[in-house]
Image (cartoon, rainbow, N blue to C red):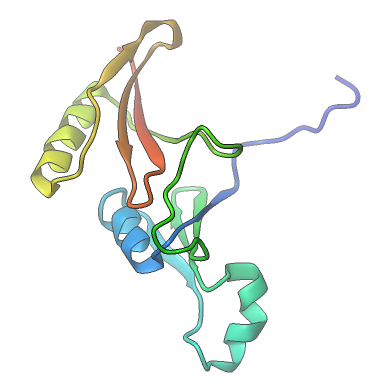
Amino acid sequence: MAGLIATGGIHHLRLTVTDVERSREFYTSLLGFEVAVESPPPGDPAAEALYPVLFGGVVMIRGNLLLGLRPVAPAGDRFDEDRVGLDHLSFNVSSRDELDEAVRLFDERGIPHGEIKTLEGFGIYVLPFRDPDNIQVELTAPMA
């Protein structure tokens, strides 16, 4: 169709967080992201030049998705999906069994989560949970 921009998949997301170390641990140890690029430590000559790109944060990768963490939110700030901006973030898993395994892992690690919901109209199961800054994250699996 003329006049449309032909976009592909999502290239990257960047989340504003209060504590980059805490959020990095959450996304790497729980969701399997790996650190791709990290801000140089303060005092490193490259730190100032990279600040406008990384904001003192980190970029992680999992598959084709880059996920950046930008640690500029004030301490104590909490995400609210009812404000303008992001509502939630959802990652695919391959099966309902993986959602059941995620529930077991969340319970083992003391991570609060919702129940697995069936969204028949979309043909998916969804498991909601929250990251350390209260950003709602979901795992989504196709119905068999």
